[in-house]
View (cartoon, rainbow, N blue to C red):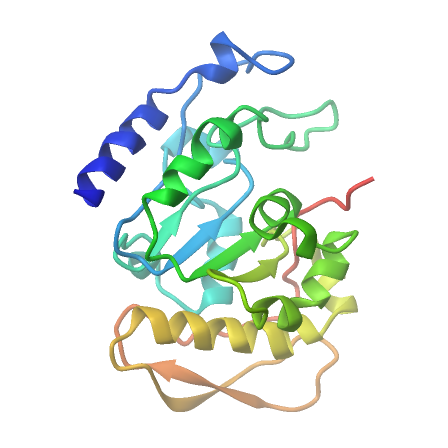
Length: 253
């Protein structure tokens, strides 16, 4: 019953035209194309910001370079990433919001979350890990636990993850390739947070769990080799994590 209800609700979301017909502010300047991938069985929710131009064109979430980087962060293959038995994907804004005068993507539309997010989450009670990507997802899923800036929030990831709250939340920056500097300034993100992220993801999507050890290259500035577990389940890959990854986000004013 829950699966049927979730499918029906997802179809209603895909047919939504609130941002065009009853917008909060300016109407969406193009035809809406809501993009989402809910699941009644996945334990992990990827809570992103909003589709970009390529995702808008294809209708496939994270079907771009940011998605490639996110899959490297998670240590999973493309097939595993789009397996709705493993991951649910819900951006804060379901439609591409357009771009500003400088060519940057606008924030997620304000209409989506009030209209749809709580009903969708209520039909996914099995979710026990939320990967909150960017300030908008963190604000909704973390509330007062969120710090004053994205950098501060992500820096407190261990405290946030280990809090007595369900589902557990791991705050992440957006995995844009354009933001190299942040990771170079914050090597703990790859050394500590990504190690924990892969462990938590692997434990949830593999019945076998994490087995074996495999060396990974460290980001720029590291002079040692560390190891992480490699999952036996085919969906988990042994991707290296290299230095020039970062978070495509803007600090709040």
